[in-house]
Length: 138
Image (tube, rainbow, N blue to C red; front, top):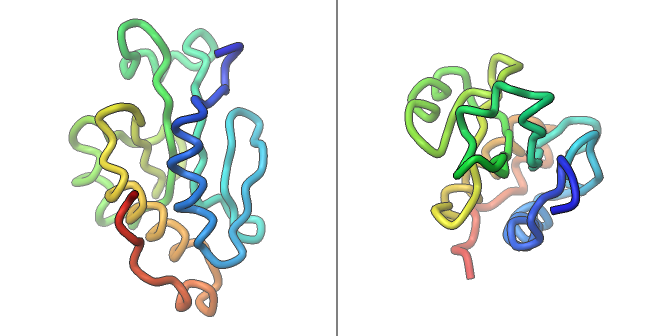
């Protein structure tokens, strides 16, 4: 990777098909990494944090390297249970923001479900109603 915020292409290759199937969701570069939005609301944000600028992420480093992280929205009632164990943790902002470390260990079916749920929380009800359960990963 050439610098902070770069996301491994294999991670983007897994996330893009999940997010493309969400009605009116779009991808855009974020201040760091890439995010998917519905209207002006962020559904999922993937990035590689700069550990020197954001020491919060140092405890999540993998073999001394910054992890690839995705943040997403989750109901507050589910936040504690979801973020109790690796690869999940609470994001350092927001009351309903969870984070997950992505890599070889990732359960992409679970990630598709979490992104879909985040989309349904952030999208207008008419768009959320058009979302079906995520298809199994290929």
